[in-house]
Image (cartoon, rainbow, N blue to C red; front, side, top):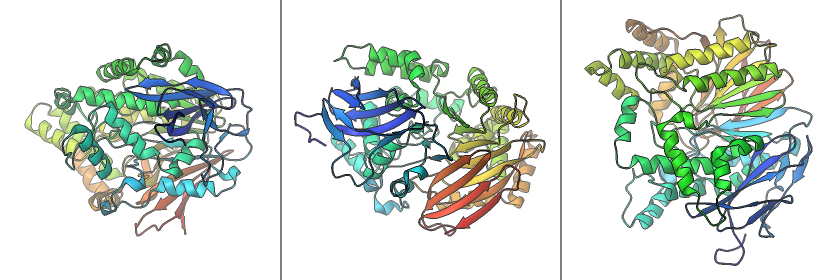
Length: 561
Protein backbone atom coordinates (compact mmCIF):
# COMPACT_ATOMS: atom_id res chain seq x y z
CA UNK A 1 0.00 0.00 0.00
CA UNK A 2 1.27 3.46 -0.87
CA UNK A 3 1.62 6.10 1.79
CA UNK A 4 -0.73 9.12 1.97
CA UNK A 5 0.83 12.13 0.33
CA UNK A 6 2.48 10.09 -2.43
CA UNK A 7 1.57 10.30 -6.10
CA UNK A 8 -0.06 6.86 -5.98
CA UNK A 9 -3.67 6.46 -4.83
CA UNK A 10 -4.17 4.58 -1.57
CA UNK A 11 -6.63 1.74 -0.99
CA UNK A 12 -8.31 2.74 2.27
CA UNK A 13 -10.89 -0.03 2.59
CA UNK A 14 -11.55 -3.21 0.68
CA UNK A 15 -11.57 -4.84 -1.64
CA UNK A 16 -14.94 -6.30 -0.67
CA UNK A 17 -16.21 -9.10 -2.90
CA UNK A 18 -19.96 -8.54 -2.97
CA UNK A 19 -22.50 -9.90 -5.46
CA UNK A 20 -21.25 -13.04 -7.23
CA UNK A 21 -23.24 -15.08 -9.75
CA UNK A 22 -22.10 -17.82 -12.17
CA UNK A 23 -20.64 -15.36 -14.70
CA UNK A 24 -19.97 -12.05 -12.88
CA UNK A 25 -18.97 -10.38 -9.63
CA UNK A 26 -18.83 -6.92 -8.11
CA UNK A 27 -15.83 -5.66 -6.13
CA UNK A 28 -16.15 -2.60 -3.87
CA UNK A 29 -13.30 -0.33 -2.71
CA UNK A 30 -12.71 2.96 -0.93
CA UNK A 31 -9.70 5.03 -2.03
CA UNK A 32 -8.08 8.23 -0.82
CA UNK A 33 -8.64 10.15 -4.06
CA UNK A 34 -10.20 10.00 -7.51
CA UNK A 35 -8.67 7.25 -9.62
CA UNK A 36 -9.34 4.38 -11.99
CA UNK A 37 -9.85 1.03 -10.28
CA UNK A 38 -9.01 -2.15 -12.18
CA UNK A 39 -9.86 -5.77 -11.31
CA UNK A 40 -9.12 -8.57 -13.79
CA UNK A 41 -8.96 -6.09 -16.66
CA UNK A 42 -12.31 -4.46 -15.84
CA UNK A 43 -12.22 -0.81 -14.86
CA UNK A 44 -14.41 1.62 -12.95
CA UNK A 45 -13.90 5.29 -12.15
CA UNK A 46 -14.32 6.28 -8.51
CA UNK A 47 -17.35 8.31 -7.47
CA UNK A 48 -17.23 10.92 -4.71
CA UNK A 49 -19.49 11.08 -1.65
CA UNK A 50 -18.88 13.72 1.01
CA UNK A 51 -15.22 14.07 0.09
CA UNK A 52 -14.60 10.29 0.06
CA UNK A 53 -14.01 8.17 -3.03
CA UNK A 54 -15.48 4.76 -3.81
CA UNK A 55 -15.76 2.40 -6.74
CA UNK A 56 -17.79 -0.67 -7.61
CA UNK A 57 -16.11 -2.74 -10.30
CA UNK A 58 -18.24 -5.14 -12.33
CA UNK A 59 -16.17 -8.17 -13.32
CA UNK A 60 -18.00 -10.07 -16.06
CA UNK A 61 -17.10 -12.90 -18.41
CA UNK A 62 -16.37 -15.39 -15.61
CA UNK A 63 -16.95 -19.12 -15.95
CA UNK A 64 -19.53 -20.95 -13.79
CA UNK A 65 -17.89 -23.01 -11.07
CA UNK A 66 -14.54 -21.31 -11.54
CA UNK A 67 -11.91 -19.93 -9.16
CA UNK A 68 -10.08 -16.79 -10.28
CA UNK A 69 -7.40 -15.05 -8.14
CA UNK A 70 -7.50 -11.28 -8.58
CA UNK A 71 -5.55 -8.13 -7.86
CA UNK A 72 -6.66 -4.52 -7.44
CA UNK A 73 -4.87 -1.77 -9.36
CA UNK A 74 -5.36 1.96 -8.78
CA UNK A 75 -4.27 4.08 -11.75
CA UNK A 76 -2.27 1.10 -12.95
CA UNK A 77 -0.43 0.41 -9.68
CA UNK A 78 -1.13 -2.81 -7.81
CA UNK A 79 -2.35 -2.12 -4.28
CA UNK A 80 -3.91 -5.50 -3.43
CA UNK A 81 -2.93 -8.00 -2.24
CA UNK A 82 -0.34 -6.39 -0.02
CA UNK A 83 3.13 -7.81 -0.49
CA UNK A 84 3.51 -8.92 3.12
CA UNK A 85 -0.01 -10.33 3.54
CA UNK A 86 0.04 -13.74 5.32
CA UNK A 87 -3.24 -14.85 3.74
CA UNK A 88 -3.95 -16.81 0.55
CA UNK A 89 -4.54 -14.74 -2.60
CA UNK A 90 -7.98 -13.14 -2.84
CA UNK A 91 -10.11 -14.90 -5.41
CA UNK A 92 -13.55 -14.94 -7.01
CA UNK A 93 -15.27 -18.31 -6.78
CA UNK A 94 -18.42 -18.50 -8.88
CA UNK A 95 -21.39 -20.78 -8.11
CA UNK A 96 -21.59 -24.08 -9.93
CA UNK A 97 -18.83 -26.06 -8.27
CA UNK A 98 -19.64 -29.63 -7.13
CA UNK A 99 -20.00 -30.39 -3.44
CA UNK A 100 -21.86 -28.70 -0.57
CA UNK A 101 -22.79 -25.03 -0.47
CA UNK A 102 -21.45 -23.38 2.70
CA UNK A 103 -22.91 -20.17 4.06
CA UNK A 104 -21.51 -18.30 7.07
CA UNK A 105 -23.69 -15.79 8.92
CA UNK A 106 -23.98 -13.67 12.03
CA UNK A 107 -24.60 -10.14 13.28
CA UNK A 108 -23.58 -7.46 15.75
CA UNK A 109 -19.90 -6.61 15.34
CA UNK A 110 -19.16 -3.68 17.63
CA UNK A 111 -15.74 -2.90 16.13
CA UNK A 112 -12.44 -4.50 15.24
CA UNK A 113 -10.71 -6.04 18.29
CA UNK A 114 -7.72 -3.69 18.08
CA UNK A 115 -9.99 -0.69 18.68
CA UNK A 116 -11.92 -2.07 21.66
CA UNK A 117 -10.85 -1.31 25.22
CA UNK A 118 -9.88 -4.51 27.05
CA UNK A 119 -11.69 -3.14 30.09
CA UNK A 120 -14.96 -3.62 28.21
CA UNK A 121 -14.58 -7.37 28.71
CA UNK A 122 -15.78 -8.28 25.22
CA UNK A 123 -14.81 -11.87 24.28
CA UNK A 124 -12.53 -12.54 21.28
CA UNK A 125 -13.82 -11.44 17.88
CA UNK A 126 -15.48 -14.48 16.29
CA UNK A 127 -15.24 -13.06 12.77
CA UNK A 128 -11.49 -12.53 13.11
CA UNK A 129 -11.06 -16.05 14.49
CA UNK A 130 -13.23 -17.46 11.72
CA UNK A 131 -11.17 -15.63 9.10
CA UNK A 132 -7.95 -17.20 10.39
CA UNK A 133 -9.58 -20.62 10.47
CA UNK A 134 -10.89 -20.30 6.90
CA UNK A 135 -7.52 -19.14 5.58
CA UNK A 136 -5.93 -22.34 6.90
CA UNK A 137 -8.49 -24.64 5.27
CA UNK A 138 -8.36 -26.14 1.78
CA UNK A 139 -10.29 -23.93 -0.63
CA UNK A 140 -13.01 -26.52 -1.13
CA UNK A 141 -13.92 -26.13 2.56
CA UNK A 142 -14.20 -22.33 2.44
CA UNK A 143 -17.66 -20.79 2.80
CA UNK A 144 -19.29 -19.84 -0.48
CA UNK A 145 -21.08 -16.83 1.00
CA UNK A 146 -21.13 -14.62 4.09
CA UNK A 147 -24.36 -13.02 5.32
CA UNK A 148 -24.09 -10.17 7.84
CA UNK A 149 -27.48 -9.63 9.45
CA UNK A 150 -27.23 -6.20 11.03
CA UNK A 151 -25.26 -3.94 13.34
CA UNK A 152 -22.16 -4.03 11.16
CA UNK A 153 -21.30 -0.72 12.88
CA UNK A 154 -22.55 0.92 16.08
CA UNK A 155 -23.44 4.58 15.65
CA UNK A 156 -24.62 4.87 19.25
CA UNK A 157 -21.99 2.85 21.12
CA UNK A 158 -18.56 4.28 20.38
CA UNK A 159 -15.11 2.97 21.15
CA UNK A 160 -12.67 5.11 23.10
CA UNK A 161 -10.62 5.61 19.93
CA UNK A 162 -13.61 6.93 18.01
CA UNK A 163 -14.66 9.23 20.84
CA UNK A 164 -11.13 10.67 20.85
CA UNK A 165 -11.32 11.14 17.07
CA UNK A 166 -14.70 12.85 17.37
CA UNK A 167 -13.41 15.09 20.16
CA UNK A 168 -10.62 16.32 17.90
CA UNK A 169 -13.02 16.82 14.99
CA UNK A 170 -15.64 18.65 17.06
CA UNK A 171 -13.19 20.61 19.20
CA UNK A 172 -14.84 19.48 22.43
CA UNK A 173 -14.83 16.33 24.56
CA UNK A 174 -17.27 13.62 23.51
CA UNK A 175 -18.83 11.86 26.53
CA UNK A 176 -18.96 8.10 26.97
CA UNK A 177 -22.54 8.01 25.72
CA UNK A 178 -21.73 10.17 22.70
CA UNK A 179 -22.98 9.21 19.25
CA UNK A 180 -22.10 10.01 15.66
CA UNK A 181 -23.90 12.93 14.03
CA UNK A 182 -23.37 12.94 10.29
CA UNK A 183 -21.96 11.18 7.22
CA UNK A 184 -18.33 12.07 7.89
CA UNK A 185 -18.51 10.53 11.33
CA UNK A 186 -20.18 7.42 9.94
CA UNK A 187 -17.23 6.85 7.60
CA UNK A 188 -15.03 6.58 10.67
CA UNK A 189 -17.13 3.66 11.97
CA UNK A 190 -16.69 1.62 8.79
CA UNK A 191 -12.97 2.33 8.72
CA UNK A 192 -12.71 1.16 12.31
CA UNK A 193 -14.68 -2.04 11.70
CA UNK A 194 -13.30 -3.17 8.33
CA UNK A 195 -9.58 -2.35 8.57
CA UNK A 196 -8.26 -5.31 10.56
CA UNK A 197 -6.29 -7.66 8.27
CA UNK A 198 -8.20 -10.84 9.07
CA UNK A 199 -11.64 -9.51 8.24
CA UNK A 200 -10.30 -7.50 5.34
CA UNK A 201 -9.00 -10.70 3.73
CA UNK A 202 -12.23 -12.59 4.44
CA UNK A 203 -14.35 -9.86 2.86
CA UNK A 204 -12.05 -9.77 -0.16
CA UNK A 205 -12.54 -13.50 -0.82
CA UNK A 206 -15.97 -14.58 0.43
CA UNK A 207 -18.96 -12.87 -1.29
CA UNK A 208 -20.89 -10.90 1.31
CA UNK A 209 -24.54 -9.92 1.65
CA UNK A 210 -25.54 -7.36 4.29
CA UNK A 211 -28.57 -5.73 5.87
CA UNK A 212 -28.91 -3.13 8.60
CA UNK A 213 -30.42 -3.36 12.04
CA UNK A 214 -30.99 -0.52 14.48
CA UNK A 215 -27.45 0.33 15.59
CA UNK A 216 -26.39 1.40 12.11
CA UNK A 217 -28.77 4.31 12.78
CA UNK A 218 -29.68 4.43 16.48
CA UNK A 219 -30.85 2.04 19.16
CA UNK A 220 -34.61 1.31 18.96
CA UNK A 221 -34.79 2.66 15.40
CA UNK A 222 -38.46 2.64 14.35
CA UNK A 223 -39.63 0.82 17.46
CA UNK A 224 -43.01 2.55 17.48
CA UNK A 225 -45.00 5.61 16.43
CA UNK A 226 -44.28 7.25 19.78
CA UNK A 227 -40.54 6.72 19.37
CA UNK A 228 -40.74 8.06 15.84
CA UNK A 229 -42.65 11.19 16.86
CA UNK A 230 -40.17 12.00 19.61
CA UNK A 231 -37.05 11.51 17.52
CA UNK A 232 -38.49 13.10 14.40
CA UNK A 233 -39.21 16.30 16.30
CA UNK A 234 -35.55 16.75 17.31
CA UNK A 235 -33.16 19.13 15.59
CA UNK A 236 -30.51 16.41 15.05
CA UNK A 237 -32.47 13.58 13.46
CA UNK A 238 -32.26 14.75 9.83
CA UNK A 239 -28.45 14.85 9.79
CA UNK A 240 -28.29 11.56 11.67
CA UNK A 241 -30.65 9.54 9.48
CA UNK A 242 -29.32 10.99 6.24
CA UNK A 243 -25.75 10.21 7.30
CA UNK A 244 -26.77 6.73 8.38
CA UNK A 245 -28.70 5.82 5.25
CA UNK A 246 -26.21 7.42 2.83
CA UNK A 247 -23.32 5.53 4.44
CA UNK A 248 -25.37 2.31 4.46
CA UNK A 249 -26.16 2.75 0.76
CA UNK A 250 -22.49 3.29 -0.08
CA UNK A 251 -20.82 0.76 2.21
CA UNK A 252 -23.42 -2.01 2.36
CA UNK A 253 -26.46 -1.78 0.10
CA UNK A 254 -24.72 -1.05 -3.20
CA UNK A 255 -22.91 -4.37 -3.08
CA UNK A 256 -26.16 -6.26 -2.43
CA UNK A 257 -27.39 -5.46 -5.93
CA UNK A 258 -26.91 -7.67 -8.96
CA UNK A 259 -25.59 -6.20 -12.23
CA UNK A 260 -29.14 -6.12 -13.59
CA UNK A 261 -30.42 -4.39 -10.46
CA UNK A 262 -27.61 -1.84 -10.66
CA UNK A 263 -28.58 -1.09 -14.25
CA UNK A 264 -32.19 -0.53 -13.13
CA UNK A 265 -31.42 1.36 -9.90
CA UNK A 266 -32.33 5.02 -10.36
CA UNK A 267 -30.06 6.25 -7.56
CA UNK A 268 -27.01 4.37 -8.82
CA UNK A 269 -27.63 5.59 -12.35
CA UNK A 270 -27.97 9.17 -11.10
CA UNK A 271 -24.66 8.89 -9.27
CA UNK A 272 -22.96 7.42 -12.33
CA UNK A 273 -24.32 10.25 -14.51
CA UNK A 274 -22.70 12.99 -12.41
CA UNK A 275 -19.61 14.78 -13.75
CA UNK A 276 -16.35 13.15 -12.69
CA UNK A 277 -15.52 15.88 -10.15
CA UNK A 278 -19.03 16.17 -8.69
CA UNK A 279 -19.93 15.07 -5.18
CA UNK A 280 -22.85 12.63 -5.03
CA UNK A 281 -23.73 13.43 -1.43
CA UNK A 282 -26.64 15.79 -2.29
CA UNK A 283 -28.21 13.12 -4.53
CA UNK A 284 -27.80 10.45 -1.88
CA UNK A 285 -28.95 12.71 0.93
CA UNK A 286 -32.18 13.40 -0.91
CA UNK A 287 -32.64 9.66 -1.45
CA UNK A 288 -32.05 9.02 2.26
CA UNK A 289 -34.42 11.70 3.53
CA UNK A 290 -37.12 10.58 1.10
CA UNK A 291 -36.63 6.99 2.25
CA UNK A 292 -36.99 8.08 5.86
CA UNK A 293 -40.21 9.97 5.15
CA UNK A 294 -41.63 7.40 2.72
CA UNK A 295 -40.16 3.89 3.16
CA UNK A 296 -41.88 2.73 -0.02
CA UNK A 297 -39.52 4.92 -2.09
CA UNK A 298 -36.57 2.54 -1.55
CA UNK A 299 -36.55 -1.24 -1.30
CA UNK A 300 -33.70 -2.40 0.89
CA UNK A 301 -34.78 -6.06 0.70
CA UNK A 302 -33.17 -8.25 -1.96
CA UNK A 303 -32.66 -11.81 -3.20
CA UNK A 304 -29.54 -13.96 -3.69
CA UNK A 305 -29.63 -16.90 -6.13
CA UNK A 306 -27.30 -19.79 -5.23
CA UNK A 307 -28.42 -22.76 -7.28
CA UNK A 308 -30.30 -25.11 -4.95
CA UNK A 309 -30.38 -22.39 -2.27
CA UNK A 310 -32.24 -19.08 -2.42
CA UNK A 311 -31.72 -16.27 0.09
CA UNK A 312 -34.40 -13.63 0.58
CA UNK A 313 -33.17 -10.79 2.81
CA UNK A 314 -36.03 -8.82 4.37
CA UNK A 315 -35.68 -5.26 5.65
CA UNK A 316 -37.21 -5.44 9.13
CA UNK A 317 -36.25 -1.89 10.18
CA UNK A 318 -36.66 0.91 7.65
CA UNK A 319 -39.92 -0.28 6.07
CA UNK A 320 -42.03 -0.61 9.19
CA UNK A 321 -45.58 0.74 9.42
CA UNK A 322 -45.86 2.28 12.88
CA UNK A 323 -49.48 3.41 13.14
CA UNK A 324 -50.41 1.92 16.51
CA UNK A 325 -53.62 0.43 15.13
CA UNK A 326 -52.04 -0.92 11.94
CA UNK A 327 -48.52 -2.00 12.89
CA UNK A 328 -46.55 -3.90 10.25
CA UNK A 329 -42.94 -5.09 10.17
CA UNK A 330 -43.00 -4.24 6.45
CA UNK A 331 -45.80 -2.57 4.50
CA UNK A 332 -48.29 -4.60 2.49
CA UNK A 333 -46.65 -3.85 -0.86
CA UNK A 334 -43.27 -5.04 0.35
CA UNK A 335 -44.76 -8.12 1.99
CA UNK A 336 -46.43 -9.02 -1.29
CA UNK A 337 -42.98 -8.77 -2.88
CA UNK A 338 -41.59 -11.10 -0.19
CA UNK A 339 -44.36 -13.63 -0.78
CA UNK A 340 -43.84 -13.49 -4.54
CA UNK A 341 -40.10 -14.11 -4.07
CA UNK A 342 -40.90 -17.18 -1.97
CA UNK A 343 -43.26 -18.51 -4.64
CA UNK A 344 -40.65 -18.00 -7.35
CA UNK A 345 -38.09 -19.91 -5.28
CA UNK A 346 -40.45 -22.89 -5.07
CA UNK A 347 -41.31 -22.65 -8.75
CA UNK A 348 -37.58 -22.66 -9.54
CA UNK A 349 -37.19 -25.88 -7.56
CA UNK A 350 -34.81 -24.75 -4.83
CA UNK A 351 -34.04 -27.25 -2.07
CA UNK A 352 -33.35 -24.66 0.63
CA UNK A 353 -35.28 -21.44 1.09
CA UNK A 354 -33.39 -19.02 3.36
CA UNK A 355 -35.05 -15.92 4.79
CA UNK A 356 -32.65 -13.40 6.30
CA UNK A 357 -34.07 -10.88 8.75
CA UNK A 358 -32.02 -9.05 11.36
CA UNK A 359 -34.65 -9.70 14.05
CA UNK A 360 -35.60 -13.27 15.01
CA UNK A 361 -39.03 -14.50 13.96
CA UNK A 362 -39.25 -17.28 16.59
CA UNK A 363 -38.16 -16.18 20.07
CA UNK A 364 -38.08 -18.01 23.40
CA UNK A 365 -41.74 -18.62 24.22
CA UNK A 366 -41.87 -16.44 27.32
CA UNK A 367 -40.37 -13.45 25.51
CA UNK A 368 -42.70 -13.98 22.55
CA UNK A 369 -45.71 -13.87 24.91
CA UNK A 370 -44.50 -10.70 26.64
CA UNK A 371 -44.00 -8.92 23.31
CA UNK A 372 -47.51 -9.88 22.17
CA UNK A 373 -48.97 -8.81 25.53
CA UNK A 374 -47.18 -5.47 25.39
CA UNK A 375 -48.36 -4.77 21.83
CA UNK A 376 -51.95 -5.61 22.76
CA UNK A 377 -51.89 -3.21 25.72
CA UNK A 378 -50.22 -0.44 23.69
CA UNK A 379 -52.85 -0.71 20.96
CA UNK A 380 -55.91 -1.24 23.16
CA UNK A 381 -55.03 1.56 25.59
CA UNK A 382 -53.33 3.93 23.14
CA UNK A 383 -53.19 7.47 24.53
CA UNK A 384 -54.17 6.37 28.04
CA UNK A 385 -51.96 5.67 31.09
CA UNK A 386 -51.77 1.90 30.57
CA UNK A 387 -50.92 2.39 26.92
CA UNK A 388 -48.16 4.84 27.83
CA UNK A 389 -46.80 2.34 30.36
CA UNK A 390 -46.78 -0.39 27.69
CA UNK A 391 -44.96 1.98 25.34
CA UNK A 392 -42.33 2.78 27.98
CA UNK A 393 -41.78 -0.93 28.58
CA UNK A 394 -41.58 -1.57 24.83
CA UNK A 395 -38.75 0.92 24.42
CA UNK A 396 -36.92 0.06 27.65
CA UNK A 397 -36.92 -3.70 27.05
CA UNK A 398 -36.55 -3.67 23.24
CA UNK A 399 -39.91 -5.41 22.72
CA UNK A 400 -39.89 -4.91 18.96
CA UNK A 401 -39.25 -8.26 17.28
CA UNK A 402 -41.64 -10.02 14.92
CA UNK A 403 -43.76 -11.06 17.90
CA UNK A 404 -44.38 -7.37 18.65
CA UNK A 405 -45.81 -6.99 15.15
CA UNK A 406 -48.35 -9.79 15.48
CA UNK A 407 -49.98 -9.32 12.08
CA UNK A 408 -46.60 -9.54 10.33
CA UNK A 409 -45.52 -12.55 12.42
CA UNK A 410 -48.59 -14.46 11.29
CA UNK A 411 -48.24 -13.34 7.68
CA UNK A 412 -44.64 -14.59 7.56
CA UNK A 413 -45.80 -17.82 9.19
CA UNK A 414 -48.52 -18.23 6.56
CA UNK A 415 -46.04 -17.64 3.75
CA UNK A 416 -43.61 -20.21 5.15
CA UNK A 417 -46.37 -22.74 5.78
CA UNK A 418 -47.61 -22.34 2.20
CA UNK A 419 -44.10 -23.18 1.03
CA UNK A 420 -43.75 -26.08 3.46
CA UNK A 421 -47.11 -27.59 2.44
CA UNK A 422 -46.30 -27.48 -1.24
CA UNK A 423 -49.00 -24.95 -2.15
CA UNK A 424 -46.75 -23.39 -4.81
CA UNK A 425 -45.18 -26.58 -6.14
CA UNK A 426 -42.76 -29.19 -4.85
CA UNK A 427 -41.78 -28.03 -1.35
CA UNK A 428 -38.12 -27.44 -0.55
CA UNK A 429 -36.31 -29.60 1.99
CA UNK A 430 -35.83 -26.73 4.43
CA UNK A 431 -37.10 -23.21 5.04
CA UNK A 432 -34.62 -21.52 7.37
CA UNK A 433 -35.05 -18.10 8.92
CA UNK A 434 -31.61 -16.62 9.65
CA UNK A 435 -31.40 -13.82 12.22
CA UNK A 436 -29.19 -12.06 14.76
CA UNK A 437 -29.74 -9.12 17.15
CA UNK A 438 -30.24 -10.90 20.49
CA UNK A 439 -26.57 -11.53 21.40
CA UNK A 440 -26.76 -15.29 21.66
CA UNK A 441 -27.37 -18.27 19.40
CA UNK A 442 -30.11 -20.88 19.28
CA UNK A 443 -32.13 -23.01 16.89
CA UNK A 444 -35.89 -23.55 16.99
CA UNK A 445 -38.18 -25.64 14.80
CA UNK A 446 -41.85 -25.26 13.89
CA UNK A 447 -43.63 -28.35 15.28
CA UNK A 448 -47.28 -27.41 14.72
CA UNK A 449 -49.07 -27.59 12.37
CA UNK A 450 -47.65 -31.04 11.78
CA UNK A 451 -48.60 -31.50 8.12
CA UNK A 452 -45.43 -29.90 6.75
CA UNK A 453 -43.18 -31.55 4.19
CA UNK A 454 -40.49 -28.90 4.64
CA UNK A 455 -38.49 -28.49 7.87
CA UNK A 456 -39.00 -24.89 9.08
CA UNK A 457 -36.33 -23.56 11.47
CA UNK A 458 -35.27 -20.33 13.11
CA UNK A 459 -31.47 -20.10 13.29
CA UNK A 460 -30.19 -17.15 15.31
CA UNK A 461 -26.49 -16.23 15.58
CA UNK A 462 -25.26 -13.15 17.45
CA UNK A 463 -22.95 -11.45 18.26
CA UNK A 464 -19.85 -11.60 16.08
CA UNK A 465 -18.00 -9.22 18.39
CA UNK A 466 -19.94 -7.87 21.35
CA UNK A 467 -21.33 -9.35 24.54
CA UNK A 468 -24.59 -10.19 26.28
CA UNK A 469 -24.83 -8.69 29.77
CA UNK A 470 -25.50 -11.25 32.48
CA UNK A 471 -29.17 -10.21 33.01
CA UNK A 472 -29.84 -10.80 29.31
CA UNK A 473 -28.22 -14.22 29.50
CA UNK A 474 -30.37 -15.14 32.47
CA UNK A 475 -33.50 -13.79 30.82
CA UNK A 476 -33.02 -15.72 27.59
CA UNK A 477 -32.21 -18.94 29.42
CA UNK A 478 -35.36 -18.58 31.51
CA UNK A 479 -37.35 -17.60 28.43
CA UNK A 480 -37.24 -21.17 27.10
CA UNK A 481 -38.33 -22.78 30.38
CA UNK A 482 -41.73 -24.43 30.76
CA UNK A 483 -42.65 -22.51 33.90
CA UNK A 484 -41.80 -19.14 32.33
CA UNK A 485 -43.84 -20.08 29.26
CA UNK A 486 -46.81 -21.00 31.41
CA UNK A 487 -46.55 -17.81 33.47
CA UNK A 488 -46.20 -15.41 30.54
CA UNK A 489 -48.81 -17.30 28.55
CA UNK A 490 -51.26 -16.78 31.41
CA UNK A 491 -50.40 -13.07 31.52
CA UNK A 492 -51.01 -12.80 27.77
CA UNK A 493 -54.35 -14.56 28.05
CA UNK A 494 -55.54 -12.12 30.71
CA UNK A 495 -55.10 -9.39 28.08
CA UNK A 496 -56.99 -11.50 25.50
CA UNK A 497 -53.87 -11.78 23.32
CA UNK A 498 -54.31 -14.00 20.29
CA UNK A 499 -51.74 -16.82 20.41
CA UNK A 500 -49.21 -17.23 17.59
CA UNK A 501 -50.36 -19.13 14.50
CA UNK A 502 -47.57 -21.72 14.79
CA UNK A 503 -45.98 -23.72 17.60
CA UNK A 504 -42.24 -24.21 17.87
CA UNK A 505 -39.72 -26.01 20.04
CA UNK A 506 -36.13 -25.18 20.90
CA UNK A 507 -33.74 -27.45 18.99
CA UNK A 508 -30.44 -26.20 20.43
CA UNK A 509 -29.03 -23.47 22.64
CA UNK A 510 -28.98 -20.90 23.95
CA UNK A 511 -25.23 -20.41 23.42
CA UNK A 512 -23.46 -17.25 24.57
CA UNK A 513 -20.14 -15.78 23.53
CA UNK A 514 -19.02 -14.39 20.20
CA UNK A 515 -19.96 -16.71 17.36
CA UNK A 516 -20.25 -17.34 13.63
CA UNK A 517 -22.88 -19.69 12.23
CA UNK A 518 -22.22 -21.88 9.22
CA UNK A 519 -24.82 -23.69 7.12
CA UNK A 520 -23.68 -26.65 5.03
CA UNK A 521 -26.26 -27.45 2.34
CA UNK A 522 -25.88 -30.49 0.13
CA UNK A 523 -28.68 -32.01 -1.86
CA UNK A 524 -31.68 -32.31 0.44
CA UNK A 525 -29.58 -32.15 3.62
CA UNK A 526 -28.77 -29.18 5.83
CA UNK A 527 -26.26 -28.94 8.66
CA UNK A 528 -25.75 -26.06 11.07
CA UNK A 529 -22.34 -25.51 12.69
CA UNK A 530 -21.73 -22.86 15.32
CA UNK A 531 -18.20 -21.53 15.95
CA UNK A 532 -18.10 -19.91 19.39
CA UNK A 533 -15.42 -17.94 21.22
CA UNK A 534 -15.86 -16.70 24.74
CA UNK A 535 -16.19 -17.64 28.37
CA UNK A 536 -19.68 -19.11 28.45
CA UNK A 537 -19.76 -22.21 30.72
CA UNK A 538 -21.22 -24.16 27.80
CA UNK A 539 -18.43 -23.11 25.44
CA UNK A 540 -14.72 -22.52 25.22
CA UNK A 541 -12.52 -20.90 22.60
CA UNK A 542 -13.02 -22.44 19.17
CA UNK A 543 -15.83 -24.68 20.40
CA UNK A 544 -17.78 -26.14 17.51
CA UNK A 545 -21.42 -26.69 18.31
CA UNK A 546 -23.02 -28.90 15.68
CA UNK A 547 -26.72 -29.11 14.93
CA UNK A 548 -27.71 -31.56 12.19
CA UNK A 549 -30.92 -30.91 10.30
CA UNK A 550 -31.68 -34.10 8.32
CA UNK A 551 -34.81 -34.09 6.22
CA UNK A 552 -36.78 -36.79 8.03
CA UNK A 553 -35.08 -37.69 11.31
CA UNK A 554 -35.62 -35.76 14.55
CA UNK A 555 -33.27 -32.83 15.11
CA UNK A 556 -30.27 -33.80 17.23
CA UNK A 557 -27.96 -31.35 18.93
CA UNK A 558 -24.38 -32.37 19.57
CA UNK A 559 -21.64 -30.39 21.28
CA UNK A 560 -18.05 -31.27 20.46
CA UNK A 561 -14.78 -29.74 21.55
